[in-house]
Length: 251
Image (cartoon, rainbow, N blue to C red; front, side):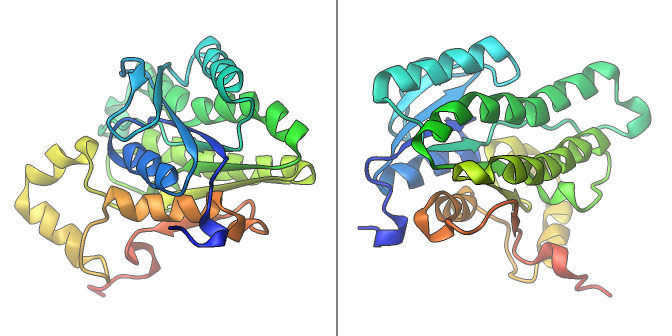
């Protein structure tokens, strides 16, 4: 059983991008802590997800989809206590080959989607006098990643949006924080990692803890920030990267 501070019994959570990878692990972790969790995914079929809890189909970049999902959750459970903005996409292209369509797609999902979902849940959180919003950003918000200029820009936007929303909504009892994953083995990254064993080994060598991250590593940080243990933390980004960002082991 979770400790008192990590017990989410009676809380209602929405996890965008919650049907695979990091999002699925977050759904499982929050549900295990006692929360009633609803995953929202643009590629999912509505019903009950494999990770448990309900699944709603919806694109976070479409305002009407976000509004419908929030209205459905409020109608079903009467509250929204936790929002985890996990939906995200990546395209690896040199900057000179990145099209306007690439920019629009990445910014719409990775940044605009965070804004739309956060704004949609805040009225219910404000009425309740409390709420937890956790955004998934990336080490790419702070470190430059080769051939991912649009992706890094979108994730840096999430970091700054997190701070701004924390500043505005703190007086209403709402905390807004972010988790920045390092290189994590997920369905999104598996092909890229497996395509080049040398690349994989090079990445691991740069990580002080000596391994790639797992979705559950990220879910643990999200659980903490969504819990009462983090009630006095807001506007912060926690990097869960095995130490990648603190220095260079090869120097």
